[in-house]
Image 1 (tube, rainbow, N blue to C red):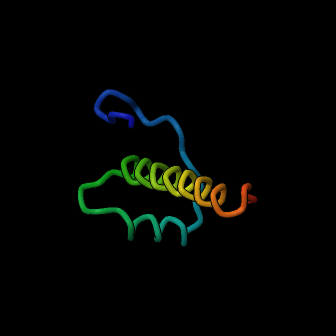
Image 2: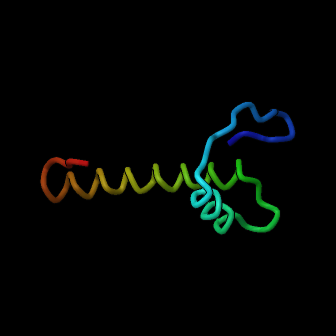
Length: 64
């Protein structure tokens, strides 16, 4: 994960108002959006690995 004390943000991501609102609801007090998005990425990667392993055991292959 990126340490914001040593790195400067360098991208702006266009979001719809509804997506911004949903992200804001997920963000904990004191948490940065960088940390929130990093956590969401990690969770997605875990889910993808679990889905890949589960599908491989069940059907022999997995179609996304």
